[in-house]
Amino acid sequence: MFKFIGLVTSIFDGIVTIVGIADVGYNETIDILTGEEIVTCLILNVESQKVSAVVLTSDKYIKPGQYAVCTRMLMRVPTGEALLGRIVNPLGHPVDGKGPVSTKITRRVESVAPSIISRTPVNIPLETGLKIVDSLIPIGHGQRELIIGDSKTGKTSIAIDAILNQKSEDTLCIYVAIGQKRSSLRRISNVLELNKCLDSTAIVAATASDTAALQFLAPYSGVAMAEYFMDRGLRVLVIYDDLTKHGVSYRQLSLLLRRPPGREGYPGDVFFAHSRLLERAANLKNSGSVTALPIVETIQSDVSAYIPTNVISITDGQIFLETELFSKGIRPSVSPGLSVSRVGSAAQNKVLRSMAGSLKLELAQFREVESFAKFGLSMDDATKQQVNRGIKLTKLLIQKRYAPIQMDQQILFLFSALKGYLDRVKTELVIHYEYELYNYYNNSPYKYPLQGELMKKINNLDIHIVSYLLTHFTNIFQTVSLDSDW
Image 1 (cartoon, rainbow, N blue to C red):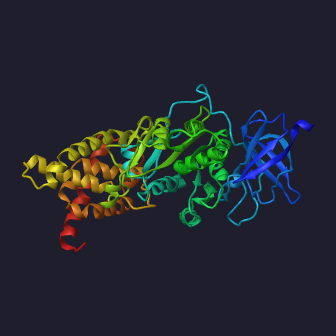
Image 2: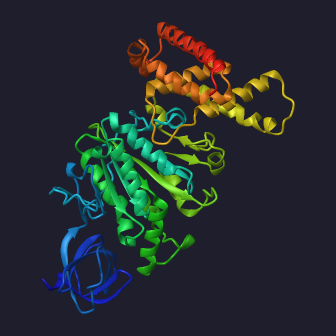
Image 3: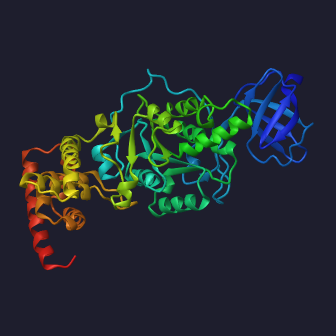
């Protein structure tokens, strides 16, 4: 049994060095007997003469000469339905002041990603409630879609909107906060609670005041909790906010563990750290799925930095947020030109997909002639019409935070824009037109007959009904807008 007992030789910056253990493995937990309490550590370095472990709780009682005992267990985390509606740390301990989490179910933090044989193609849409995302950069269940952009451009808001839109769906959500302020985390939990989404959401929090070890562990704990539900045929959305801070915490641990630094000071296996995390997102044949929305922060839109390039190459597309668009008031500040979804269009709503092609073309043509409008150059009537249409299409993609829009309403509004109904509306009234159109549609007797068809297909009769509804509403709106001061 002595091969399972070691001796602590040093403790510094949360790293414990232990000698004398002959039989121990990477990612195994180890208990240190301090005399005051049992401190759990995680083995991250296994060398010929010693092992190094990171302290997962407090290291104030650890001293050289104390005994360390192998647990013969890989790192595990609590999971199950009891975590929904709770805020827990990466070890599964509650931090929301609502008492202990009553679950006996645990799962390995590190596990092998689902095999190719067990997966099925992404074919079910995950609707975010954001017009620009659902129409131009669609996401499917089981996809890994990166949200990337500079600080304070609305990356977290897009992720929270996606969670809010799952309230009416059968999708559970897990939000992993890495290195954030506690005040920001509290604000997010308040938003979810106010919108009655917290009961179907679990929050895994490793805040800026927590150790680098907990910040490194947080996303793996989050996906382990999600896999429990996936294995039971449920759909789960996991947000990693954000992997830049996760990479920084892993770099800090690696340097303390004396691993050789590489590009930008990161260890050579930081790519593996993120790839083995994101590969666990999958759409399984038993209808269970884990969808990953990792967030990465850039500096001055530099996507060629180490972590952004790594995560871009791992994921199935990216939603790119531009600082320039944000400063212009175009929010969400998603760049239609630089953002892409590599598999989501296969799962997109068929009606929306048929219109999205026209929308992409119109926006691309507008970007080409936009510079002429900026410099005030003389333009022919066709170019003026193109610029006018492009400005209105850009306006219609603007959306308030925490206000996801149902898919049938998105389709109706996009149909009105692409079929020319907005051409008669002043540019500054586009947002009012949208708001009043939703009210008119929701109170219209045509809503329920159209709702199902808008989600499936529009046949000739339905196009006639939609055209009549939009024509009638646009005429009323024009009359009212001429007599009213908006």
